[in-house]
Length: 83
Image: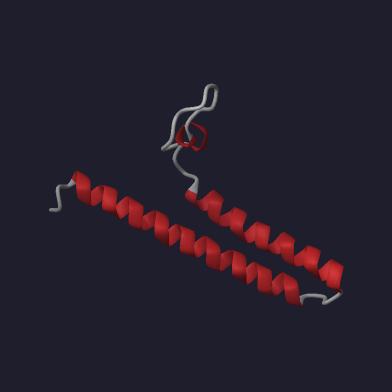
């Protein structure tokens, strides 16, 4: 949490142990899958929406992992003083 600390809420790293990247990736895929299943049920377009939204979930998850790795690389570069 970068902002002010809320009382009684531990930092994210304390809950996840710092290994939330894979869980986030899985969550994006699962969310896309569930949205696709809901849209398939609602529109009647059997597997189309499930496939499309699963792919969207994978793409968003991969993009977020890419962003997270860039932040980690930048932090490592600062710690090594650019060496």
